[in-house]
Image (tube, rainbow, N blue to C red):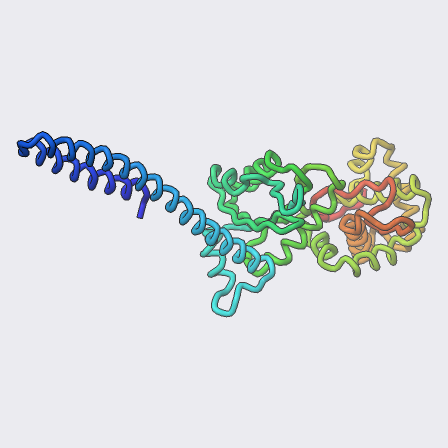
Length: 338
């Protein structure tokens, strides 16, 4: 029962009793009876306050218990979608419906470091997103705050803006996906995007929408093996030389194979880009005019992008190359030689 209606019932009850006592007192002749009724009336108003206070406290306790139970259920449903195991009697669609996620919307998964032990790093994020018309559901673990956000076509930039305003720690965001079955994979991509940010730095990083980047994130061991196989000779170069060649390759791939545009981004002469690309060809044995070789080189650069960002001392991972600038967050485009 709603609390205001219950309190109103208490007021009506005591007011009715009070009116009846007043009417009885008017009809009574002995003064002693009037004194007794006035004393009883004072007790009635005192009891009214006590009953209202007891009822309000009990109502708050029951409401808190219901809210905790509801939040625990929502947290369990979020966990079910993130793991891909909703339960024996329900599938992903049923879990999403219980969470209020609108059908037909694209989903993103958000993973943020907690500020302390199980302390939210995106405070009041569900309410903040709801205020902009975006539905989401969240789960808090000792190390991460995890969320599933439902987006319509025009809401992606709005959601990212809200996340940036709320973020107090590293926050990774997966690319949008349409199928609920892809949610566990999206969680892995969100965690990979989080790991790409420097430790201790507050910020929001969205994982690349490129299928190559996703493939390397889902198969990191294979990605490291591929990167070392394709770029082994490059990775053995001194840091500055290695960074120049890798940044040139990334600029070339990011700008549709245009040497002129790559040179503009790198602030160097086009002949410098050509020279570096020839060195890459000599070191890797792979030609930028061969589609298969280009695919291997592009995949290797994405493997570097999603590799281990925190290697142990003395251990060099391809994702942590000194002086290496990761490629831009965009899919690899068709390439044309210039």
